Image (cartoon, rainbow, N blue to C red):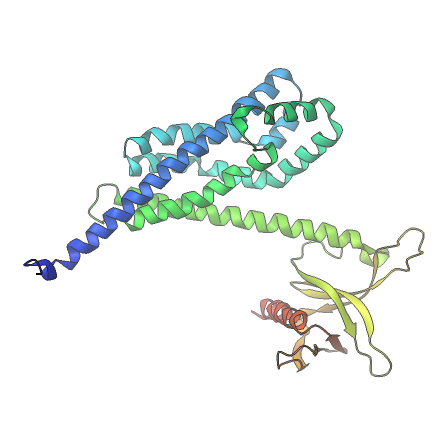
Length: 335
């Protein structure tokens, strides 16, 4: 028999109860993960940064390049955790936000940090032996220094998700609603800046790799300041004769066509010679065939003011990926 009044339960009260359950669950997860995060930060700060400073195994500039503002990030977590343990979420996170700039600095140094680690492991025997010794401590379990270095950037993503959920499930009449909302916004903005820094670093890595593949006088500086989108082999279909394989490098503003150097070339074997550079702002793109999704490949038509290219691939999926990337490049130049 149905209890009287059960079906008439107030929807507002039910919503508040759901918010409170989600808030409590999110708060618990934030607290538990912060404890583990601080523990791992402390391992690196104590057994690597502090001891390396005392021993002088690395010069100060090398140590700074490797760890960046690690100790300051550790200190920020030490300040935050007591507030979380006391249930003062808004006050703690509001006080934490001025430290977010440390995460931006850490992201900007991330590529340099990985390069420094690999260089020191390769050439510095004392450092290599020291790292192996510290990683063997029982406190580290199976973790390696290389696994721990990205930890602050991974935690920033967790902060964004958890603090956003905490703010969304805190009622507007709650005393810490404004503090949590502001903290969620500032953490999200920082995460976006860090993501942009990571994208630029990945792009720079692609550009250096592509520049190293290009040889000859025409290749100098071709990749500077550009955004890399895609590379791969396509067949160039001439008006007469057989299709010729060429390597294509697509950037946000140009399409570069290159020809492989002869394998027996004394100095430039394994590289590519630039044959043409096509501006994407002047490109008109059409699929001649390859619409059906079959396995027979397809053909793309690229029209420029002074030339028309017919590019063929025997791989239907690869052709679709090229069409998508070319469309993005063209639209970015015309927007």
